[in-house]
Image 1 (tube, rainbow, N blue to C red):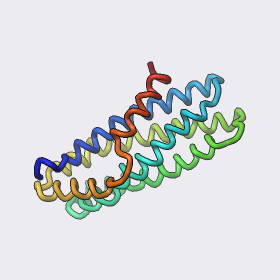
Image 2: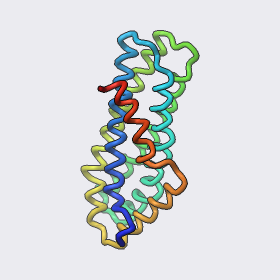
Image 3: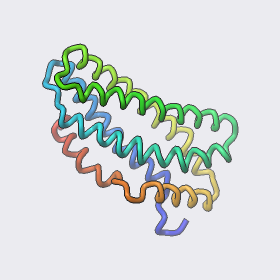
Amino acid sequence: MDETTRDPIEELLLEHGLHRRTLVVLERIAQAVERGGTFPRGDIAKVLGYLREFIEEVHHGKEDTVVYPLVLELADDDVAEEVGRLLWDHVATRDLLASLTMFAESSDPQEQERDGFCQMVRAYVQRMNRHMNLEERLLFPAVRTLDPEQIAEIARGCADATRGQRGASEWAGDIAELEEHWIA
């Protein structure tokens, strides 16, 4: 890997950090809604935009098209089985995100819809935290054992997959603004 190529695992870990921060914001929004607060449609739209446009499209896109296929090709059966679980998580989180979006786009969410939104938030946050923990515990260490050329191949594939997309650093400001309002 030359000096212009970023370590793909470090990049994915940095993205996980931003994602965890966003999940805390989403939890805080759900807690406020559960306590009877107003339904903060604008902030929810920002969070869901990040989850849809960055996590599902960019981050999971890199994993689905670059990282997971190479690991599946080279891994032992135990790691390959876990990669299968991670792929399934991506399907499940897309479905949960679609449900969250439907609740969030309700014109005037009533108590039942607000409760449904909060339940979906809890399910999404739980699934994503478990998913990231599994990647960090099992998948990323497995990638680090690959030879330097294979890691460079992943780095190039990740760079290609994100070209022209809004990256984590560009989303970080939006997330920081949400944190100031919901966490500080």
